[in-house]
Length: 356
Image 1 (cartoon, helix red, strand yellow):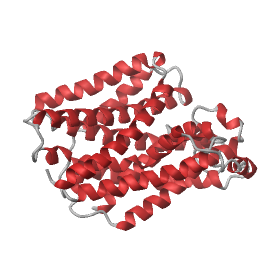
Image 2 (cartoon, one colour):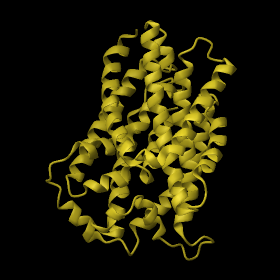
Image 3 (cartoon, rainbow, N blue to C red):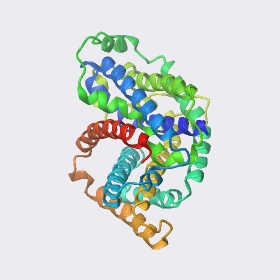
């Protein structure tokens, strides 16, 4: 079951390659980006390790089951609702980001509401599945898609259009004092481990050390390629002109002997699957946390009302998204998540380890 933990972390890394991480980190390419990435890696790996140690004391239990062991009900409800809200927003931001990509690249005339409705049909089925089945689906999608995504990354790194001088130019600013924003953004690629809050139900034994070694290696590869490949392809100054640098990078690649020559269409098709399962995992966690609030967790009526709330709020947000400054909201949310994650992990370390 240890491989399931690996899947959760790698899924979050893949999702943020095209939506959050590159476009925000590239803004700080001359402002201590390299040091910020290194600090984020140390913090991300540290928080991940501590969190897995805490949950290892409660094998086969998610947070709702753990809190039922002695915490008073009002405080339990506050914790579960707060955490559920964070996971819902994480999934919603990923979903809205990808819909915006499809709207811009595929068909600007297509309504975002209809795109959202198509995604919600699939999500409505997946997030209500048992946790074990959600994980099975995640495993299948990663096994089918990761090799092709890896091939696209390989094509980008080996492209004749990759200008290493632009990458080295950014590297010369390594001594610049880092800022908080890029550290918070870069650390988000590790946040897939936090899904253990529900998926710990599947873990019956301690997470093995080899998982952390693999995650460290993949995180280095993901962070540096997701940021520096677009810089190398479009120049250290030209890259700032793009909202989604990796989409434009993929559109710069060609497969002359493939049935589909433009790599961007293959890339977008692969990421439809990745985004759907990523949002499904986030909303499944949010759904299960909210179910922990009420006594009868199998109440069909309450579950349907909860699903209606999730979907209704998503539709309301996308109707008003043009007036909400989504990029600014995403940045504030990433910074807030950074501090909440630190407080939550440290708090649980001292609280849950006592086996309430």
